[in-house]
Length: 364
Image (cartoon, rainbow, N blue to C red):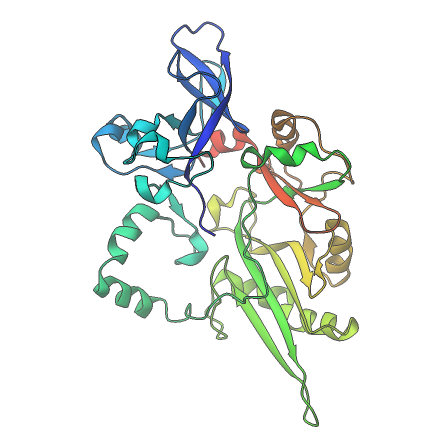
C-alpha cells in the first residue's frame, strides 16, 4: 500500500497561539498544524499534506519555492507545526466529490521528499521528485537496471516490509485501554531484512535459501561489498538463521533491523563501523514480542534495539505519546529519533517520531 501523503481530513480542534493574532494551531487527527486565523472552523474538511512531502511546481504552491516545495517539521511562535493544510478548492473535483480519508496524493502530484538510501547506492540521498521524473523515460529505466543489476529480485511475499504508521495518523489506537504495549527505541539507519527458508525434500538433504533485502528490494546472493553484506559477514547471519531454523524446527525465520554506520544517515550515533540492531524477529506463527525477540537474538550474539519501557497501557493523547518519544539514545550520543510501540500479540504497532529530532536534523 502506498503512503497517503495527501488526504482528506477533518479539523478536530483550533487553539490560539499566545502572542499571535493572525495564526492559530489546528489539530488534524493527531497532527498540529499552523493555519491562518479564521481560515478553518472545527469540523471543516481540508486537504492535509504530511511532513516529508514534496508538492509539485504549480502556481498555487509557489510560496514554497524557497523551501524547494518541501514540507518539513517547523517551529514558529513557540509551537511545532507538522504538515500543511489546504482548502478542498485546490482539488480538481467539486468538494462534494470527496470524503474524509480519501487519498489525493496522486491527484495533487505529491511525492515523498527523500527516497530511502537503501534503494539506491549506499550513502546517497536522491530526491524522489527528480527520480520519478526520469523514470518515465525508457532509456533511464534501462540505465538504472544496468547500474543496479543486483537489485532485481522481488521482496519475499511472506514477510511484510518495514513501514510503521505514525501515531498522528492512527490516534484511535489510544482508545483501547486494555491492550498492553512495549516501546523500543526507533533507530535512525537503513532497514534490512534477512531470512532463511528451509526447503524440505524427500530422500535428498533439505535445501536452505538465504535472503538479504534492503527495505523494499531483495538483493543479489553475491557479496557486493555494501553495508548489508558487511553486516551479514560481521554477525554470520546466514549460519545464525540456519541454527534457529533447526533448533526450533521452522520452515523459515527472519530478522528485520536497522543498519547504522559511518556513511548512513549522517552517522548520528558516531560509530566507526557498520552495525545492526534487530527490531523484528518473525517466523511462521508471527512476529515475536519485543522482549522475547531481544532475548533470542542476543542469545545468538546479535544486538537488539533498546527496550525503553516494559509492558504498559497507552496514555490518553497523541501529545502524551510524542512527549514519551523524546529522550536520549541508548546507542549513541544524540537524542533518539523516537519510539516504536508493539503490542504483546505482535500484530499491532505504530511509531512516534520526536519533533525535536526532526527539527535538529531537518529530517521531515
